[in-house]
Image 1 (cartoon, rainbow, N blue to C red):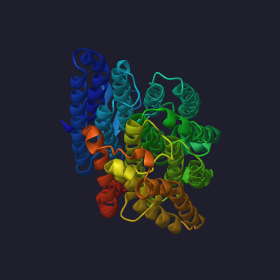
Image 2: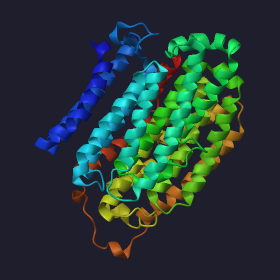
Image 3: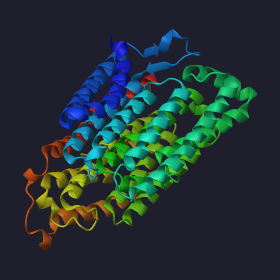
Image 4: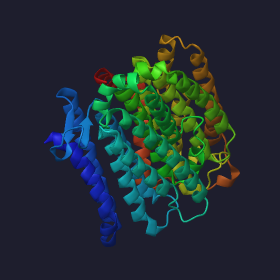
Length: 492
């Protein structure tokens, strides 16, 4: 039965996306409840899948009983099961928040469309992690691209349209680049199953090395565009600033990480670390990651719009993940995986906390936080915890993530990146701390009438509290997560 759970998860998410418009005609509240129950079911099944995979072995599923080289194959290993659990957890938390926020600025007729897109996006993300062939990975990537574009531009306003157009244009360039790389690999082996490709890469390198070089370069560039790795990040700040807060949270916390996970699958499962590094691609990623850590923070410091600031902050944090990956070591991969999960929790907490500020003030100005720590203490406390995590203050998950990366770069004798981590952390402090000082140490005469906590829906407060506590829990007890990550790396 457990071996069927991955398929059941996918079918359930797809059916929910199809059913939303019909259920809404009966009751939108019923739609929200049914969607929440379904996500809980998917989350519980993901826990069982991870336990099964960790203790018994991988789940391999062939559709239609075709062999791997002919049909579609799903392979659920510890890597796929851990990160589907991560995606499902954050998706449920953000979903609960959205039910109280009414998806921030979206007109009532768009409610059902929003959740159709939401469940389709989750369906595609689970499919990418489960899939063991490159073409179906590409199909799921395209579904994410289209649903992400729609979820950015769903407001009935002109402002999101340029950002959505830029997003879809650059993401389609990334998709075509990825597809070109797939074509190069197909020319070598005649199939696209990841395991079978891994077995033919070495022989392909001796006969058609140019194809493999083109495949590595084009697929890396394509995924870098989609993951907003510096300097391919130009779509991200505008997209996050224009989208509703729940959309910004799912895009920054989860979607861009999915593309990095696809890149990790390519490097480790298809090309191999030695071949990838022999072409100097590890050095290229190191340079991109290090530059992103610094430049993302510098750009964030200049922003007046808080959501644009958080968008550039994501560019910086993605740089940490890329540097960990580029070290091509167990310690580096360990730090990258930890940072993916830590940043997912932290950035979701930041965007959703800002969503509460927008819900109350209808403003996104960085300078408009005077006295908010006393007006909305829960939201601003969670914002503060998440900001401390971004800076790397001890007792937060962000500190552990940066500490692990520091150990990894020191072990790899890349000492210059120790300085880059310190400089980036100081820059993080320069744009997060002034907001916290204004919120908790300044009073605004315009805000004499205090806003009571009860005016904020509980469905919005509870998710951010859970995120804030999770950041502290992982920061204080990092081994809770590190043991799971070590299991994944051992099996990779």
